[in-house]
Length: 209
Image (cartoon, rainbow, N blue to C red; front, side, top):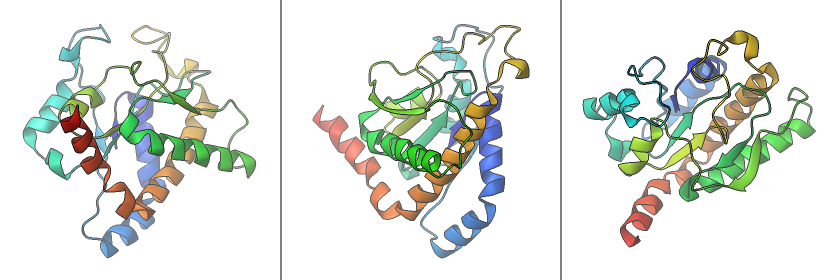
């Protein structure tokens, strides 16, 4: 899982703390399985343009270092621009649409059981394959890594302004996102045998195109 921006990084840290014992047990019993938490916060160049690809130097350096060979990455779940009010999250890539729908189903189940803060629905079963927001994951996608981008459908209004601070964070969104992603990662790893085929499907579809 990859994170850009402070809230996304904090979500991954919370996830690691909450699921630590589960990870130890799962990975000790399945040596062919792994999960990497990758933090790109603070990696930007001086460009303030959110569409300027030169800003993605974090992803470029990660790929060039080959800390994790791209061929070994089953899927990259990337978190971006999370924490503003009234955000909703669509599916931006066909190959990971089932994973997006899994997150939506998990959210619905957690809401019904009263485990989420009372707030708006985050994950919509909505396909927007041509409206993804550019970020580090774009480079991974181009190089054949299936991507599930957990990002809102538009940039936060306070992005790159003095108002981009804790006072303008929407805490119900953040708390609910943590709850959903904890369950999502758990269920993803529990069904590893099925999900490991994502890479093969993505590569096959790319060759056909």
